[in-house]
Image (cartoon, rainbow, N blue to C red; front, top):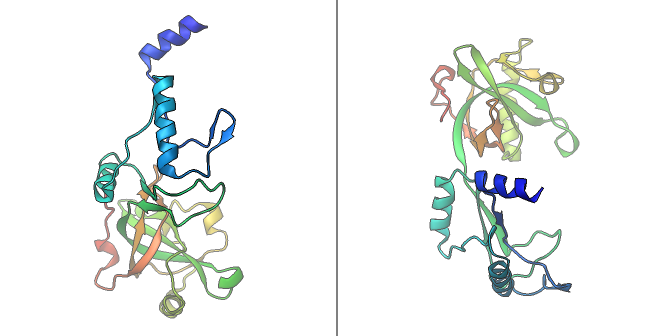
Length: 220
């Protein structure tokens, strides 16, 4: 009921953030430059009033990235003011700039490649040491070049083992895994840890021959 909605709105304020406008009174405006669509959007939002909000635009990319980092956001999207809105199409006029972190990990398994990676490494299963053992931290399947894959195959083949070295590896990831002794340390780039301790959007950076597995700690 309206009275209940009004009461809840006072107790739990909600705002609607709008970033773009594609249609105005039935007229498709997606082909207009972003700068013009932005002007339309600001006028429409002003007429609508609260709780509609049009967030500010940063002209300084470094400042925008720093601000998004302070708020724990994933990153920013840099947009050309002259760009049209292209439905369902990626454009070089819109570029994602993501925050990333690095984490040292211990390699404990291999998932065989499929498709164009058949016969080689599809992804690596990695972990971070904890008080309970080598805590599973997910898979790393991107960032490899052909030479890197060949070198990893050469290094990991002698370490093959029948023993799962991880704590907490899901059955789905363990199903076709080839285990290896957890002797090698690597570094990955990632977006964040999930609540379950899994690396999200992990990407290979390289081996860390200068580090021993027992020196690896989770970076918070």
